[in-house]
Amino acid sequence: MDIELAEKIRALKEKHGFSYKKIAEAVGCDISTIYRVRDGLITNPSYLIGKAINDLFLIQGSVEPGRAKDKLGKLSFKKALLRSDS
Image (cartoon, rainbow, N blue to C red; front, side, top):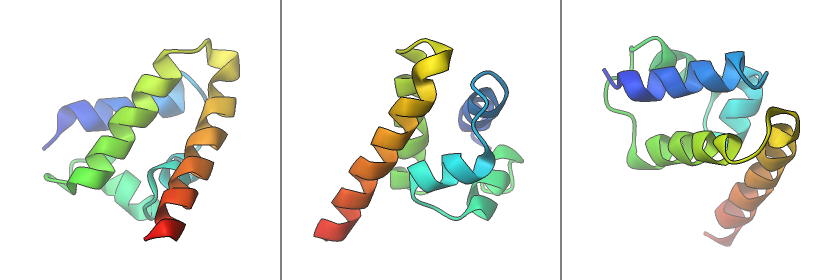
């Protein structure tokens, strides 16, 4: 189980007020995947999901909590653009 990713998901929810739906949108996966990573049911998430959770966690840590949601929206937009290019 990747406890570090589970803890990062919980921190995004508890400390910065992100909904699991918003986290899933920013990461680019289904909300059930976020729940399963959080609960340890997915023990080895794909590289892209793990990287996206880490990136989101790093972005929210680099801004004050009140502005973190703005960064979440920008990350979601950036990921949507990347997905549309492939």
